[in-house]
Image 1 (cartoon, each protein chain N blue to C red):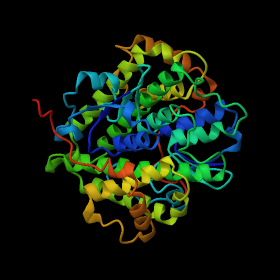
Image 2: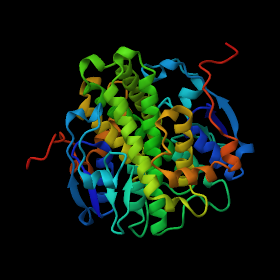
Image 3: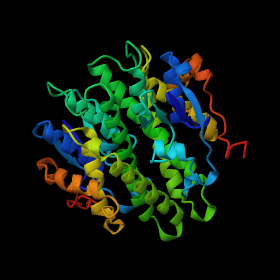
Image 4: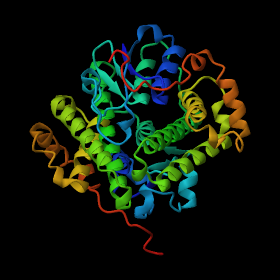
Length: 216
Length: 216
């Protein structure tokens, strides 16, 4: 398998954490992609192999061993689960499954807001909207308040909801530390402190995306 | 079940089409939501029941009969499939399943771009970015080119990928008819012409979102 990748993307990190947790990471070849800061506000020049794999123009994208290019991190994670004998990243059918799926959707929504906020902050100042930035910050805050309130549903066996929530906490520390998300959310803070100790999380800590290939 | 709804949202439409196709629509109570045009660029005043169900602040959200509020249309559609005896909206495991999932992700990506473009066009003119609008238009164009090229994978039994692609075509006609997406994509145009004849599509044709409750 081949994964179109950067070290900063939380959605790429989700795929990497899942791959490590399922023992699939050695079967995945990393294909770095480069993102000039203009990515947020215009069409950039894409690597032809990447944009052919994913016309949406977003990472991650995964080329399967059968040659199908998958896009969207949750669909990629679903595919990875079919590559192991016992899929394990969702609770079995029943109420706990859907409570977990609820938190997966909310954690994903918070990540999308963090990316939208990032894109806005990369615009030319004259084209930035303080209202839009506040909208995304408010959205993130509401999602984190919900994760705090429903934190019990992040306990138990490893789930994609836990992984996504953990990556959301980590991305806040990476991009928006001044939000100090832990202050009003002590339970989520404690939960994340434990979750961040997983080997899969330590091995995928985010770092800045190179704006172009160093070979250029 | 209770669905937080508007008549304009393509992601709400996806849930409604799936519900109709699975014979579940009579079990779903419609809960209208109202969106002042400022939704794109600031935090608006939300209905408390809605924002409690979905702190992301987006529609659709579905309150299940068990009282779990699900967010994200694909997760909601997955839940709906568990409410019928034979889930049918993905091809069986194998290559065709993942080709279908690929097109689902790409059709979803095109819809997200249409919504981002809409939000941008609702900003104050001084805060609009022509580059951002072009970026979303280019993204939609690439996704539709891909659907044209891989149109064969939209044939066969009904799938969530077909439903999402059909709704994407319909939303382009609703919001961006001047793009004339059919011109360079005759196969997709023919496919959509047939798909749009489904009763579920006819019953869910988009119309403008009321900006506030008429009772206000």
